[in-house]
Length: 423
Image (cartoon, rainbow, N blue to C red; front, side, top):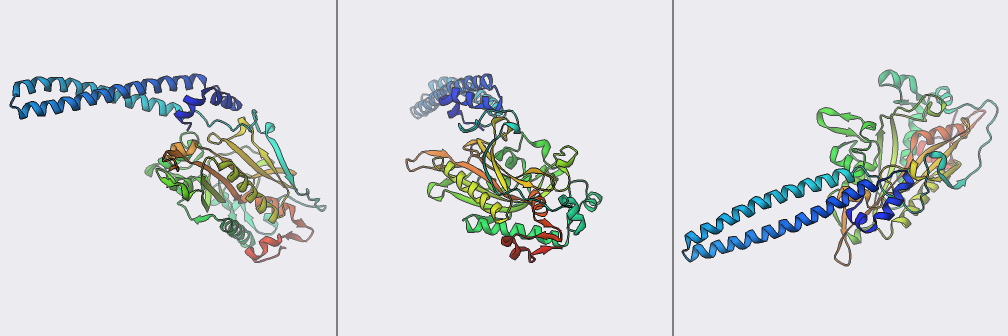
């Protein structure tokens, strides 16, 4: 969430930035700042009351040592009044802090200056386009027909066993999936990321830390009896490793990666845009996360964007990069770049990765800080990226690399899946 310091020092800039999301937060921010002023005044009164109470306690001790019991009893009456006053002030402090916290949680992150105002995906800014759109042979078909023809993915069996959006991968389809995961993890390892196998369920504190709660509660599967949530992305458990942690400045950047299945309740609409692998309730993804110094985080973001580029080029997929507009960005992000690959048989651009810098927004919720060389404690910046989400990668690979006789496997992937073709 936004920090009180940023609102105190840069109120107008924050309000202007939030307007890119078509959010008018001016009234809420004024309310927060008024509560914050009241809180600080209450804190000063509480400190004064406690100081007076401590002074009277010392006076009582001196009087008792001098044998002046009646005088000590008279002073005790004053301390009782101060204790009651202090209790009232403390309760007021807690009420104000809770009100500030709850309202701050409803305000999204302030977009970076490079983010343009916009309402929807149509207003996103294309920053790069790489690779040629493949020309397919006559008779080319979309990936769900290829998956059925070559017995790679069984959507009907998944619907029978679980429901729509939970496919079975089989035979070479399963090996292809496993090979892609290993390839992505190896690339992350070579780039200096430490690999984790995270839990696939989180508690509510972790969901709050990275911003899934309370904003996206309805999009997660909830195990009500234990109050645990199936993870929507590996970002959540990986970033929460550093919840309530004070890291050393020399440890930054911290680079984490991990494979996990991801679970999302969002149903989507019907039609070709959500057929086959285009939108699932369960899918596999390799995630990269960095925790870094605020002065370096945008250079770090560039390295993460380059990392995704390298993966897509190794898979020989045409792609484009979009800088999301204010109206299309996630609640917690300061800036996001989406990668889309072209799916030739569907003639669609499919999103396969989002790379985001959250600046201090998540760190403030997580209470993840570092102590700088000046001795001051500061919030870190957190970043994450999909490297990569598999379903639409597989969809585009099957479609773009098909020919009259089957499907060609990109050279960089062949050693991971153990075959050169699917036919």
